Length: 425
Ligand code: ADP
Ligand code: MG
Image (cartoon, rainbow, N blue to C red):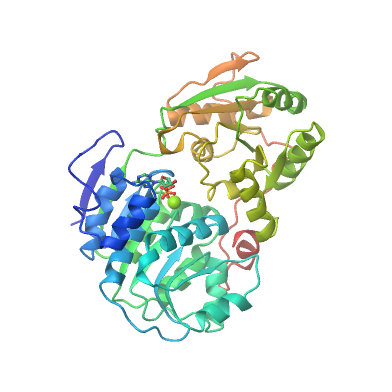
């Protein structure tokens, strides 16, 4: 029987603290320094289970604190059980769908585990593998990576996971979208049977529940408010505008100084480059961020955005997941996504850590059906801030957008996912 813990984000139990969960002092100290005063609902549900050695299935949208929910129990158990590492072997493996997300998770492990003397290695694509191989040669306590490069190092036996005690699959639904399932199956097949596993996903399509069944043993299921419930602290506006009018609308909106730090989402990488260039031409500091850029360029763009040097980040959905920047005042959907869940993830980049945020959508005639899908999923009708809502848009089939490239990567068999890897890992 699977035990289910269901929580909503509004539910609070004042008596649960990180100290009462029994963490080591150095971890409590790091949490305190990071400003984590009390666990979020998913942490409250997942941490006791993780500490007790149970497998966890966590269902929660982004921004709910999943990283600490899986990282803290692993760190605590490692703190209590120091081992000498085998060359190229790791004791914990965390898989994430994008490089940024993996880097963010690795940084969190380092932050919370600062006093524990653990060896953490980041293994992602887009950068040379030699440094990663060198780091693995000393053996690792924790490896965080993207599926493609992880498989790559496993193939050359520069990463050994046969004695891995902890395995985490983060953002499983995103992995599925990106075509990583064959890589993931390969990783799971190489793990020892005796291990503790956790899987996190914002949604639970059939493929993901199937994967969970194969991956997790008698899991504690922790579900918090579904992906369709957008954070209420985000005001959602829509402008009905011709495709040709989007450029000048964006420029005029960004004249408003209340747009202190904005992320503009486009549907394609090419679109992101184009919009960033156009903004630069309007003397608005902007940088593109998408999967075609090298890892260093992506990190530079993100750092410049975090520091405030760049006011507008123009991103695709792929890049969106790893972005955790506080103080994003506005999210602009320059083009609406064809998957309504992506909209929820996009606007979740603002209003983080309890702040307020504004989401602005640009909707042209080809996107009305997307807008309908989004409003159906969120249950919230967007406030019309410009143009007029067409009367007969209901039930219209999604039109094929001229810019729309083929986005779904079909898992390839029997040899695995070269294409998906070069796209995202
Ligand atoms: P998710 O993986 O669910 O998207 P993250 O783990 O990235 O969420 O956390 C989202 C943000 O919330 C991060 O900035 C993180 O530092 C912060 N956060 C997480 N847990 C807590 C907590 N208990 N107290 C305060 N801030 C937290
Ligand atoms: Mg996360």
